[in-house]
Image (cartoon, rainbow over all chains, first blue to last red; front, side):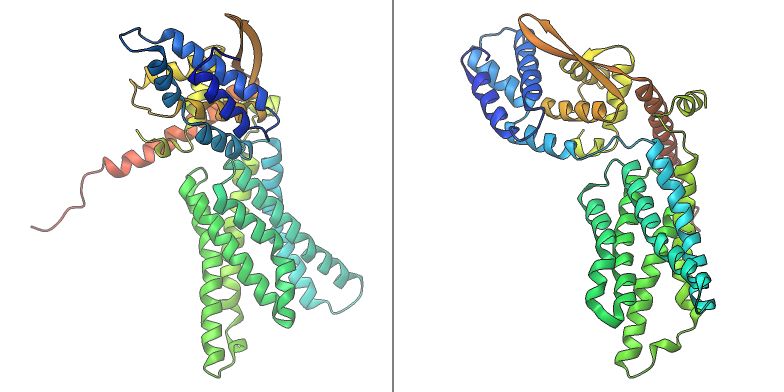
Amino acid sequence: MADDGLIEAYLRELRFSVATLPDADDIVAEALDHLLEALERHDRDSRSRAEIEAEVIARFGSAALVSRVCMSEAKRGAAVPTTRTRHAGLAAVVAPVLLVIGQSGNLAIEEGAGHGVAVFALTLSFPALAYGLWGLRARHGGLGRLGKAALVLALASPVLSMAASYAAIFALALLLSVAMTVFAVEMLRASVLPVAPLTLFAAGPLGVLVLGAVALGITMAGGDAGELPIELVASPVAIASVGFAWLGWHLWREPAVDHPTQGHRALAG
Amino acid sequence: MRADMLKGHLDLLLLAIIEDGPSHGYAVIEELRRRTDGALDLPEGTIYPALHRLERAGLLVSGWTEVNGRRRRSYSLTPSGKTASKVKRREWTAFALTVQRVVGAPPWPTMA
């Protein structure tokens, strides 16, 4: 590979560390080129070649560090608006609309095709929500481990909530609220999207969690949490819906970098 | 400057450097060091995975040549990369202005 010495030993270690990645050979070839280029350009002084190689390798970073960054970067995106994030934005706009239409129809129409359509719309609101969340995460280039965990929790929440049997709807609200709160906090930290809709998106699920705690307290005190005013119960969901749809609208309006005409629009803007 | 302070902004720095013309990894890192007067103290090997990610995202395209008997990979911007660079510059400017408004503002008037 390279000449005998520390660089060759380093590249062997790096090769071993990144062996599971599909572009392992390219990573090692680039590292070899970098290290030899750095070695060639290094100021000649009284130090031995081994000492200079050690310095060049130290500046490059340990094989463990480089392979760890390779692994984590392999799972990330580029945090730019694309055609898919725009479509996800549209889904985020549609999700609350489907939720409202579906739930209203579900309550107002007791049977027949109208009821079926309402339930279908209600069911569709979840994939729309999931796609919208995926788009928000993609727009941020991944949102780290917490963002990924929040998305997985949101996607798994309908299945997990079934374990709560008759209380499944409350379990679903709880799990989704936790997931969306974490998601919102991570997006606020990233500072990519506007603060106002992000704040609404964060406030909604936080409100659900607070309401859940209040309802639990009432129940444990022997009261009936079902007597809480419907306006109070619905308001956090409405706030989160406005925030989510607003974020979706923002994603939808961004010119996609992978679209030729929209890309030109962004360059001109 | 610590590596974690760069979080979220490395892509813009890389795109801005490669925007000036095709570059190989070592040249990109040297240019990063030159433009920042050495203020960015990143392990050099951690830049390559970011370049690979930007290529996978369609913002960069790379090609291999042979230099001094070894393989060298050079990166250049795609049309999507040029657009992304513009978008990210705009995001950075808005973010920096927002922070500056806070840290550069005069203190809240207090009663003596």
